[in-house]
Amino acid sequence: MTSVVEHSTVRSIRPEDIDDVDAMIRELATYERSLDEVRGTAADLRRALCAEQPMLFGHVAEAPDGTLAGFALWYVTYSTWEGQHGIYLEDLFVRPEHRGSGLGKALLAALAQEATARGYPRVEWWVLDWNEPALEFYRSLGAFGMDEWTVYRLTGDALTTLASNP
Image: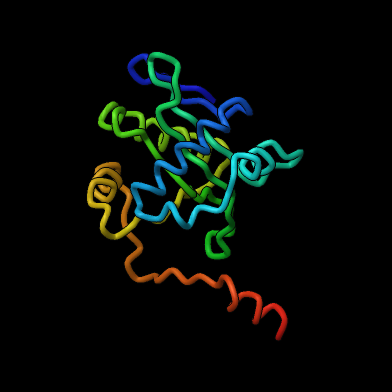
């Protein structure tokens, strides 16, 4: 699936894009004040995206000069209440010099097209509470916060302890 935004292109990720996407993941983590939490590598990303039966998918936005200006990484979820699959957007990032150009919207539109083509009723993602520019952008598209839900995470020692003591 490919679309064009004012001489820019949004398309499915290719193996040759992975190193640049990995670099943008680190740019995103820096913006989100959490670069020290990034453990994944370009090799990890390549294994996930290029697997025989991938469980991770992605789109990239090419600037008019052909360089990568942004990306969206996503995977398929399932809603027991809907009785259908959906898309979970893991990361969306547009490099600062390309923000406001329509590429973020184009990346989300590509996911919306993917969801509707597959018959999925929704696309979901998390947003940091302090990221007001992102919150405003998403609201402008008609997205809304799920304020009644709290995200929980089990990791590290707590995960290991629970796994070894069922």
